Image 1 (cartoon, rainbow, N blue to C red):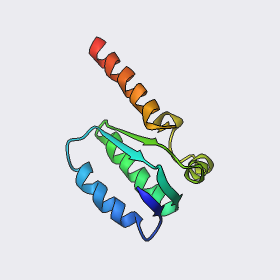
Image 2: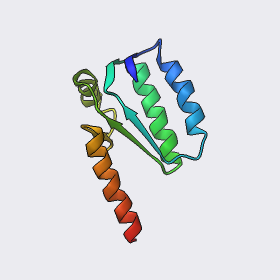
Image 3: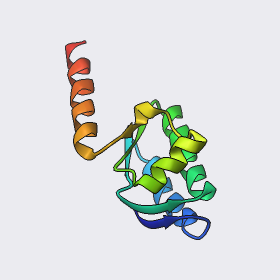
Image 4: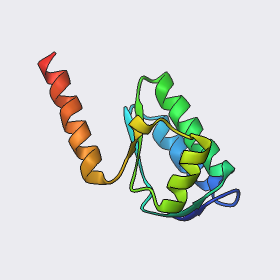
Length: 105
C-alpha cells in the first residue's frame, strides 16, 4: 500500500480486498511501510477485513507501520497489539512459532 488511505482511495482497497476475502484464505497481511496517511475511511476497510476474516476463523496482521499511521492506530485503538508487528521479520518469527505449535498438536 502506497500513499494515503482516505475517502478517495479506501473504496479501491475495499474492492481489491473483496476478491481476496471471497477466496479460501486464512491470513491477510497489510504491509503499511509506504502508507503515509490513514483516515477513518481507511480504518473502516481494515475493520471490515478483520471482521470478515474473524468470521472465517482467519487472521489479519499489520506490519511496517509508519510513525504517522502507528499514531492513528494507537489513538483509536484500531487493532489489537497482537496483530501489529514492527517489521516483516518479527511477523515471520511469530508465524513460524504458530506453525510449529500446530504441528506439535
